[in-house]
Length: 323
Ligand SMILES: [Zn+2]
Image (cartoon, rainbow, N blue to C red; front, side, top):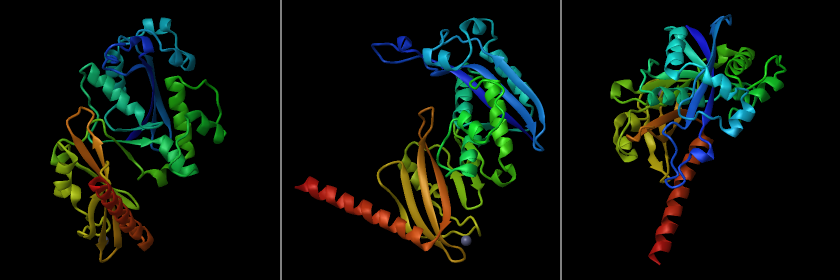
């Protein structure tokens, strides 16, 4: 296996291109104009690089803000090859056994949206797992939640800055340098899942076990209520021993996208459940991302309190409506 550290530059609609009547813009919001990538083996040796501009067709003119940041001219793009040609070369260059690494979660999503837009084949494996180096940087050096710009991370780690930021290949190299500064051995379990193509069938559903929690991604259901009726979604199996932990508080929600539960494993104690409902990009429905985490007594109590709060609010609302 090798790592492909990927970075993209894209262009978008200017205000002029948004139809003033319907307020709509072309189907593709971000048109990729450059792909840059570095291939690295797991020992940290750089094996090669990929860098190419793409001739834009949806937005031939660069949006002012993009033009100011990205040092690419419209003249250069005029002579570039099409997305299809560059994509096919890029995929061939990636090889068969790779894991993507990107700064943040957007690049893989936008890349696949461009692929869909041109009706091209998407050969990425399912599930598409990747390392979000921006997240790993935060986990290693900050609170795990803050998200920093790439140049911030490079400055703070005092890494050599030989090239300007905001060109795809340069940013891919900078992302690699940040990654190289992390202890990937300890972060290897912190893999991210790309949700552009969620599971469609039961056999495609995703089960991942991390050090201190487990993650499950369900297939797509028409509604969140349908999803919650599914046993794979609502089960609370202890990820340490594989036994069904008995529910002490059944799944409840605050009428939003989140559901919570509390179960008890006789061998491992309190198991907190959290489900986030995500919309499938193609509008076909929702899928559940369930996290189960063994927690201490204090955290278990918080779930109980959360449920009480929601019930109290609901009662107050019903009361005020009945007045
Ligand atoms: Zn257990």
